[in-house]
Amino acid sequence: MYACKKLEKKRIKKRKGEAMALNERKILEKVHSRFVVSLCYTYETKDALCLVLTIMNGGDLKFHIYNLGNPGFDEQRAVFYAAEVCCGLEDLQRERIVYRDLKPENILLDDHGHIRISDLGLAMEIPKGETIRGRVGTVGYMAPEVINNENYTFSPDWWGLGCLIYEMIQGHSPFRKFKEKIRREEVERRVNTDTEEYSEKFSADAKSICRMLLTKNPKQRLGCKGDGAAGVKQHPVFKDINFRRLEANMLEPPFCPDPQAIYCKDILDIERFSTVKGVCLDTADSTFYGQFVTGCVSIPWQNEMIESECFKDINESKSEESMALDLEDKTESVLRPKRGFIYRLLKIGGCIDPGASEKEQVPTQL
Image 1 (cartoon, rainbow, N blue to C red):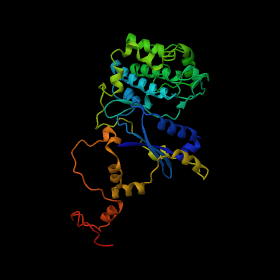
Image 2: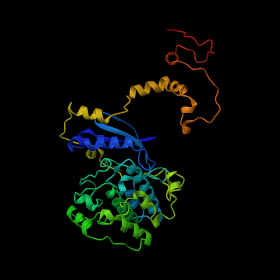
Image 3: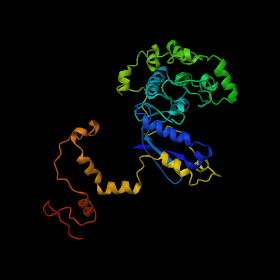
């Protein structure tokens, strides 16, 4: 089962989000990580561009932090999620990708309680040996160098990890309390000048890693001194995390979502929420849609392939050596003669008696 992320065409055009949508598709195509949502393929409908992604039924961390009991997690749970996010950032940085939008609502839980990073619309690939600039992100989670429009590489993501750990433990972000009504300029002032406060919820190690990740000078920040994710993983807060086992999916998560529960808030007025008025699509937009939609397979063709069972011919033509280990059939099977495409079409049309023997299987009607 997969999830479908629908990007409304009119909303994209109204917000001039073509570059962001195309960028997300390209980034997802490039990244293959256990800790980042995977892209299966893309297609378009009359009204939307669609990304078929890994399904994550466990909800996002923001919902779990604020809607299930008291705000925040116990430290063990927060550290486990932080370790998996760290692995995800490491995989992105291995491809020279800076994420730039790390926040609880972008971290999703799967059925088993493991996390994946999602929503890579603001991510950007950095050419080797170069830096980038750009005031992008979410208010309250942007690093000082992003707010001040300075050059950077991967430092904003380590700042974002510090904000995430702080919020998971404390129950609100370090520079803005939950639902606090405050101007953007004041939040940015706090990020640049104020020091975050720590309650008794933080152990010495948790407080230490937050302070090191929330260092305002990116050159002094944990993860930004040339050691990257390896330096972050060595912090004492992760002393009970075996990262090799974590990366091999061999560690048990501290929380497993209830398969019967729905971990999201209700959207009561879908029509009002999703409709964009006053925007018209024209033929010029088709060029962009053609760039976005790759790996698109028409629904009629998919149905024909399924009904005619032609995909079985493709599977049978593959040698055993070329088959992925997780697709191998471990049961003993009876070797059957291959049937051609014409045979299958005749069978579907009723021209061949399915109960006849191999020698008797000849068309009964044309």
